[in-house]
Length: 152
Image 1 (cartoon, helix red, strand yellow):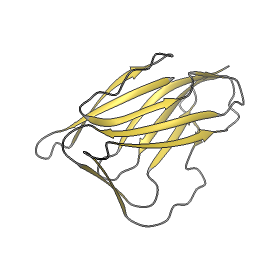
Image 2 (cartoon, one colour):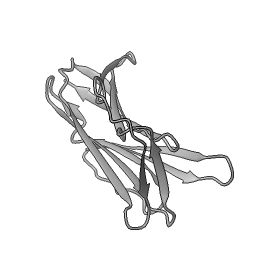
Image 3 (spheres, helix red, strand yellow):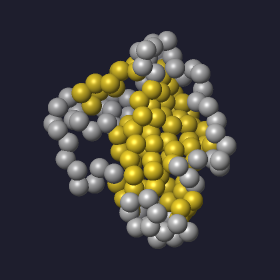
Image 4 (tube, rainbow, N blue to C red):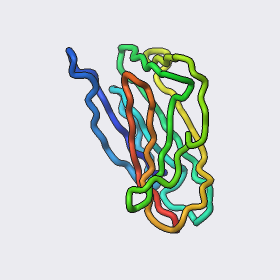
């Protein structure tokens, strides 16, 4: 399983969100830290055959003792974006979709520490290395993480 964990912490005052990244790869599974909040992006494998579907997951977690709210402009909560080696976007989960125009809020903290969003990319990709980015599209606390996958 390929995975990247983005850890964040609240800074006092108007400084907002601090984000740190740690890449984790291979078949080795590492646990999400017991404290902090952030996102974790993963796929079911690191390497795929051309045309093979890719299962994607975005985990949003809050292991702090304080609740954190995420506000959204519409019904969309997440997105996945795939870029080729040149940096050109080749697939976007939300591409061509429409979302209900309604304000929304998700809250994470004690009692509900994690949200998991998943999708499948069925794009017929050419062999190469791709950057996959998972995004929490909250307007007040947007977070993202990226990993590399290869298609052979």
